[in-house]
Length: 263
Image (cartoon, rainbow, N blue to C red):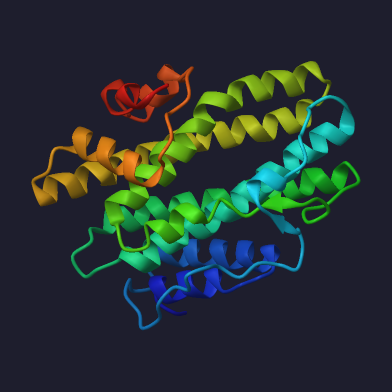
């Protein structure tokens, strides 16, 4: 079995989503069993491998999506499946790109767990799409999700500030309403999947906050103003209200971080 970092690079280079999922679960289990070392010899690619489909468009070129009707729910689930596929790679890229001999084991415990859960999320959504007569790749998807990774490829705190602490935190804000809309639309199976994703991602935001604060403490820098500066540098937009304060509080993500950046 290759090292954790080498496994992460192998997963990033796997184009087929099912291969990516299987390799993720295998690497996560090996890590939990303490069967592999951390560091290796390989470096992550700037962009992960992707299947031939879905067609990737610029965000502004994506068709508008409405939840009404089965077609709307399929479009929603497809978009979420694409987000979760990117989330698998974002977790492994964080490990592969920023691992050092001094990084605490707890960091890898957290992010391997995150990657393993993101793989489960993508698989659940893909299975649900097939149950509805569609599949991942049947619709276009936008290619803006990896931009944050490219822009923070050399900035550990920047990566944490934008990916878990802006993008995933935003998921905490919007997912409960989406769950309710799916239930009202008579689709409890899809609603249960989103509820599972929502519950797991409270932990993902918590991991982002924990390691952001750890790195700030290690560098002797105040976390809240550093977060503000990095979000303004890399996200370059106001954060959207309303915030799901109870979920953010469960993640230990205090309002002092995000409220001053809101519209």
